Image (tube, rainbow, N blue to C red; front, top):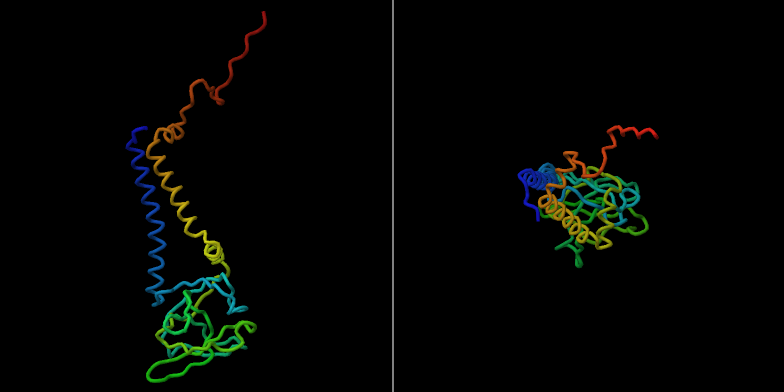
Amino acid sequence: MAIPTEKGKKQLVVTIIVVVAIFGGTYSTYLVLQASFHTPIPIVVVTSGSMEPTIYRGDVLFVKNVPPEEIVAGSHLERTGDVIIYETRGLWASPISEPVVHRVVNKTFTAGKWYFTTQGDNVITNSNPDLYLVPEDKVYGKVVGIIPQIGQVKLFLDDTGLAIPLLAFLALLLVISIIWDYTHPEKKETKQDGTEDPGVSNPGEPLAPAPAPA
């Protein structure tokens, strides 16, 4: 095995720094959104069609926490009022893992707390309001922005179960690449220095003229 050169070691350090910066930057951005929007879930990928045709499966939503008294109730048919994201654990008899994204169609203030009646916009699957009133402490926030369909990749990976295997495969490729560059620095240096293999003519040099026939 080749002995890593100083240049190879520097390249390894740079590669590690770049990888850490990418993952760290992504995580930092999420933390900034959490702080800016005052919610632990500032970004949500829609996983069902209960809000169609307003919001579709695969849309990415930006969520901002607001005071409960500022949440506006509207109409299911006219699609007015705020769309909120709320937690079902401790609320539904059979809670689901993902937060629910539904429109507020009514609100009441009881015993010092706001409660919201919600309903999906889909007139086929959600013709009636949701069964449970949503207390203010279960609300993550309201939808303040939508990016259509860019969450389809995440849904595909989740539905097919490929998310973890794909991440593991990419991580393995990265590790192999780092180890190869670290243990074979002379190959990369040869290419960068433009060193030619022996016995191979340089195509940039003019060929010597053939000798004239006797």
